[in-house]
Image 1 (cartoon, rainbow, N blue to C red):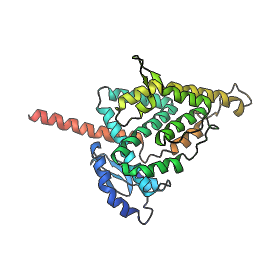
Image 2: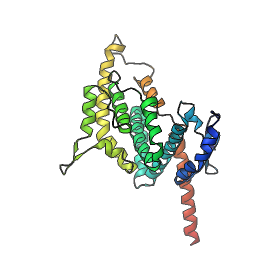
Image 3: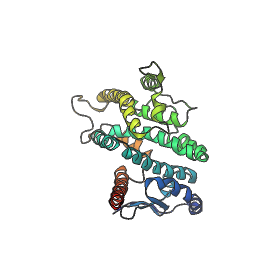
Image 4: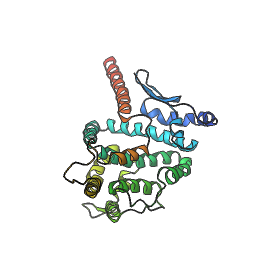
Length: 298
């Protein structure tokens, strides 16, 4: 069974650049249990355990060659984090619980994607610091060029500000007062010992285990995000409908579907999360069968 996203080759110097960097990506991806090599598409072959990547996916989004290399390594990092989560005690149950929550409320998955992206970026850039300058340019000049975003929905401001300020800490983003209040509150959470914690830094730390990240995000960040979302709902009602008793954006379960889709498009994924999960579970099943066979032999 093969999942794929077909991409044609792009720039003339692209092949030479990624031929040089192929070892970097294949070595980094080895922890996933899949053998990654550059190909003409992003593809997972569940039968052979082999996979191919193609940074042209990101080049066609407007990324430079080095930025496309970073984004490709970042994509593999999603595999690594999910693998770590599924290998933890309780990790599988937590993953299934959150998948159900995200399916019922997709905006919560959007929140998780933005938090996870910061954490994964930090981990990639710690391993490959030479990619830092181009990555900063990617976020500053291409993905999130705006620093004045107070005209956007409150919960969208919240997501963009956390991600951009985490990636570019020397540049503050101008947001609405209630959004800034929520962000600053997360930087000063008082624990039982009386010590103050910056929850944003904790959940995006490169070394935090995925289970803790999910639980801390749900406990501390999600309530503020949801409160801002509810304010957005109230603010939109009189603007979008003369009859405020009628549901907004009929035909869509998400009243902010367009805005949410735009936020997802800023973080493109060459392979869906569900397919990555199935690939990892295939590897885990194979490993379990091999372990059982070895024990029986012994």
